[in-house]
Length: 228
Image 1 (cartoon, rainbow, N blue to C red):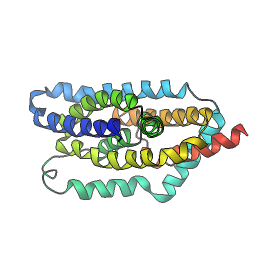
Image 2: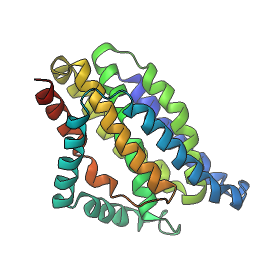
Image 3: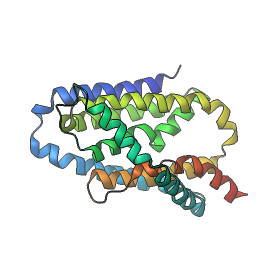
Image 4: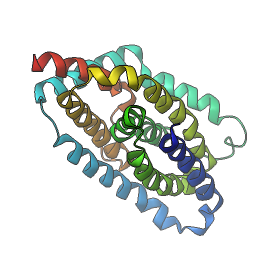
């Protein structure tokens, strides 16, 4: 049973609900500054992840190819359209939401390198420690963003669950094919996406991060081919 995965998703849902309920208790100046702090923190996490890289050309190739595919498929536009449709419904419609920032948060929660790696680890070995540790961070992150963006943040736990459970269920088949070098390059690729997300959250540079997501799949192939 994916205990860590379930706890991780519940932490986002609960953090979002509590943050939305107690949002008025947090000073506005703190709400204005905290996203920048989270953005810089995300950049730091991304940098640490990149240091694990084994095949730099393979990772760069995956990021470029993944971004091109994402652009051609217009993944970010479709994602924005879906969440616009969802958030136009009650009780979300009464809250003004920065859609660009919201999609960035969705990406961080749902397809972060740490989350996917944790789901793979739990699926293969049953070790839930990675996702349980991530749950603590996600709880407070969701609460802070929900203080500004409302209850909609708690709904991120739904796509998060479906994505991570898919990774969890497929991990037993995929894991034997993944070498340590491939996993290291995947973590580095996730770090690049995390930096891009941090830049958007901190409003330093707007990067279409959803269009970069295909890189997380492509990097396994480029890393394997480069090693060969």
